[in-house]
Image 1 (cartoon, rainbow, N blue to C red):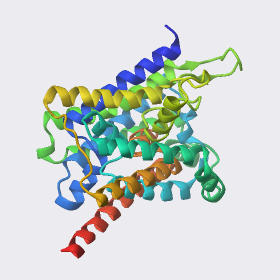
Image 2 (image 1 turned 90 degrees about the vertical axis):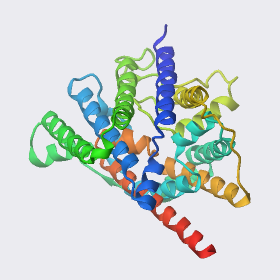
Image 3 (image 1 turned 135 degrees about the vertical axis):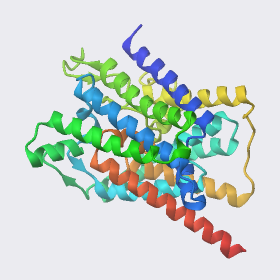
Length: 365
């Protein structure tokens, strides 16, 4: 069996596991923010925090043991496109509220029978593709991304601390990983009503999946000398670099793969396989538990909100280099400054959209 096939099958299985867990536990970043803002219920927010904590500890453990060179991922490039992170995050956060969920939640809902999530998937994918290669890409590259700062080395917090203090980088990875991961886990577990078996397993499973994909992509898919270039390469990914879970660009690549399937240069990647996997995993759990329901749009306004939200997620997610999973779990697991900016902006955008919807309801009443 070829390494590429192993990577693709791993993406399918891991995506299915992610979809099954999310469908079974109702894990949702947008829902976590909505519960906290509208209801004062922070259980799902704590589950998200626990997942981030597990992802941080797991990812830094892989780096310290030498199994994965996470510092070679695009998240830790010296260039910090802070305007893109902030603007893209705001647009994505606002859009996911209008669309009723983030990109990963959209795929989970498709598996559970939501036809309106299928529309969101198409609009999001087309907009993301236009933002990657089309007219919106020109706007993004020429007007947004030039506003950046370039650091002397990696943009992750351990590298910044190592350069500032002169301490060994490995020591800073160990300290930052344990301290930040430990603090997040402590805050998540502080509430007694959160410490149930389901909540603990949800956080452990989601965070562990992120670290697991880093291992598959960065270790199993690593080739020290590619036959064509004789240089180090990571196969099975669209970017040619190690990747973990993210769903904005892979949704665009999924549509590209479906539309140009007969093109021999168009190959299946780990990210695209994970997109199919999450929908399949969700469908399996929904069918097994009686949770599968066909769902359509309520009215014209509902349709418009979902379409606009999907478009905002497509452009915002590409601009911010990720979504609530791609930045909110995978990016943050590397302790990258840009990822932290993106997540803070996504949360701000989501809260703004929730307040806007509340204002609309109060005004109509």
